[in-house]
Image (cartoon, rainbow, N blue to C red; front, top):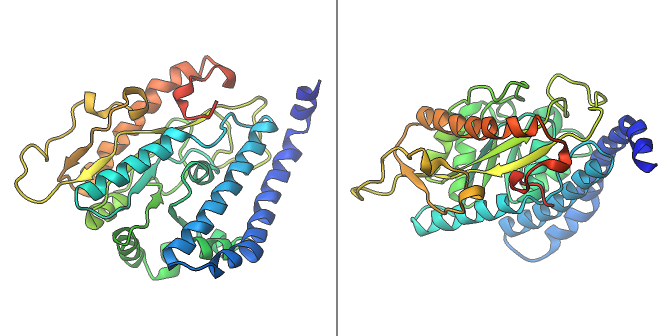
Length: 316
């Protein structure tokens, strides 16, 4: 009896979710995060405390979207967090900074919160209208996030800032499409995030965001809610590492098709060191994510949210 009632009230419940998101961000940024910054520690340690608190808030946000019957995703997607930690460890073992460039396709309005609900220790680049929104501005600043390039003086300045932060051990989340994906799949990836990762010497960790039709899509109003629970999942794919220093044989070859398998399916910790350009990497990762989505969609199109395989990244 409760489920039909929830479905009838889904649209106002989604409105409550967005309102709670803004108000919750204001409360965290205004009252709780200043307290976290008073604790002893380095600037990075204080920033990570605030990121962890924000991650808990994002988990609550997505739990609520699940409860009201909007989406199937229940964070954390543990394999995403584990794979990022593996990439960080491998990066330090190779003599590179302990940081990673996370890149993902961008089908919905909640991709950033979904990823950070699973792994919150990421720097994001927010649009000026969002970064300076009064209720969220302090939260963004305490967490170390940054505004879009227009606020900083251009894309080159933003790129230099992100490179420096990656070298200092701060991981970054970027969406190479620069806008949300259409229903047909991701748009071509821009090379900027990949050039930044190469210049900083950090691994690139792709995440495939797998979303059913009609869920909080670009171009749709927030109140256009699908009539039933829509599948949503995160899938951590094989990372790509910058080539090591000179003359270690076999490091600059393209990964084989077998080497591109999803780490969640294969359990492999293999990596792909290479010396590709940013443009080549953008195409490689685009193909990697598109292939993973193509493999999943025939199954998802025939199934309800309850029938989604556990490897989707949802925490069953």
